[in-house]
Image (cartoon, rainbow, N blue to C red; front, side, top):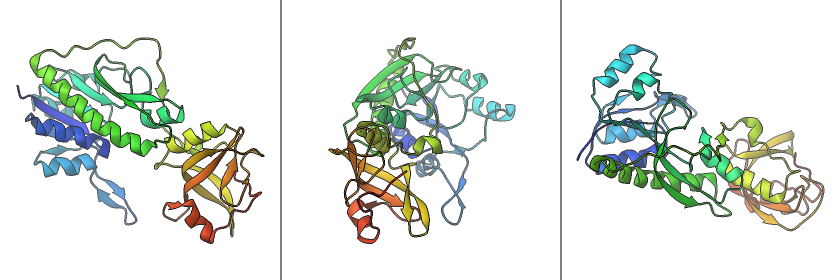
Amino acid sequence: MALRVVFMGTPDFSVPTLAEIVGQGHDVVAVYSRAPAPAGRGMELRKSPVHVAAERFGIEVRTPKNFRNTDDVDALAALAPDLIVVVAYGVILPQAVLDIPPLGCINVHASLLPRWRGAAPIQRAIMAGDQETGVAIMQMEAGLDTGPVGLVEKVAITPDMTAGELHDRLARSGADALGRALAALSRGTLAFTPQPEDGVTYAKKITNDDARIDWTQSAQAVHDHVRGLSPFPGAFCMIAGAKGPERMKILRTARADGQGTPGTALDDHLLIACGEGAVRLLDVQRAGSKPMKAEDLLRGFAVPTGTVLS
């Protein structure tokens, strides 16, 4: 049975799920996304990835700032959706919106709830050294990612996987899981189970302070920190440059043998001591430059033994 669906999403992560819903033949009566925002060097208004995809599918796009205006809630209700599907929309839905569709509002969340409720579940899972995560299809309610779960799909986090790689894997898994959930919902066989009270963790938004590398941590912790923030926003440290200290992002590392004062280069090839063990810097990005391999950096920017990164 085809459903009348309103889709709400904004970033790249949401696009595969929108495509899956359209591909299944459901009637997507409107797409809601964040409004176009200034981006790039020219700061020109840029539509979100979901906005662009929806237009490609010929679907009407709406971009209210929020739903505090009753006119926006009424306009949504007038669409008479059976279901609202939400994937990384970025706008809080009030109870008045949650109450509109008879089948409720379903969210595709990038974690195995109740672990990593909140804004940055992909990054936080890797930064914590988790070996497994996944996607959860959740019935939305007023609390932050507290609703009952109807379906989960687990995904392994491999030892060197970055947040960007996991993001792409979970985007595909989320689309697949949502497709199966809608098929079951159409048959009336999708059951939602309350989340357990044990094991709740919160994936708070990543701040600039979170991104700075703490070299006093173990090599494993530094490695997890770097890959959990790669490629965006990028873990960073300070290093001496020709004009004084400069910020350098570290995008990929490898754990290595070595001991020394934390943050100190143990050789001329970016082996950096940690609180326990060491890491080899593999991919880096200087301020104002593009990401590059460590060997490319060293051709024009020497980091000799004894250099201190802070």
